[in-house]
Length: 148
Image 1 (cartoon, one colour):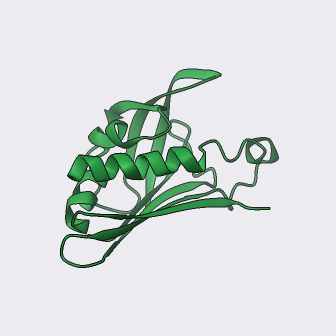
Image 2 (cartoon, rainbow, N blue to C red):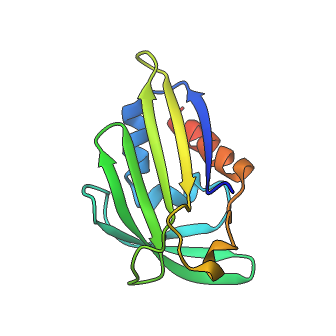
Image 3 (cartoon, rainbow, N blue to C red):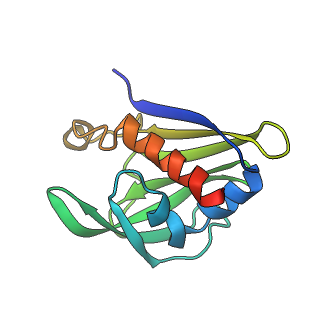
């Protein structure tokens, strides 16, 4: 059984511009291709693993809720990722990661990974994937448009 989705696209923009945008949670609602992220509730620019930021969310069947995100990986200029969890909760076992690989001075290969391989709660596991491949690709498309 697959426990992750990966989308990849070449974007005509430098990795630094995309990394700057991805590490600013106040702009994540502009990028979200699933339409569930409404905006930042609390948190600052991502600068360290372990940092938290809280988002206002809306999803069919679970409208107007909050989620925390715990930064799981941060490699300046190339990689940023976080685990989404309940407010003040611990890592539930799924992560979102963006990898940026320069492909020339103004081109970047963007890899967006949604991984739920560490989910252990069977009631939660059966809900995956909650975001489709197409929605993830829309996120990468929106990232590309935002830095164009």
